[in-house]
Image (cartoon, rainbow, N blue to C red):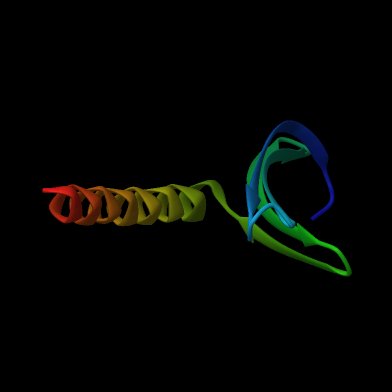
Length: 76
């Protein structure tokens, strides 16, 4: 997972003790995405091709829509 970070967004998880970092990286002329989970004493990294990342984003959107539906049902 070498390469230059050209974009990065961080979010907190686990009640603020974990940083989830989504990083757009470039290695030569190839772009890819790294999802980093950074906690005290533990770091995990997952590398996605652009196609894999698109599939991951689609999955996240499906889960987010399902969550929104469940929240709406629970509040009605």
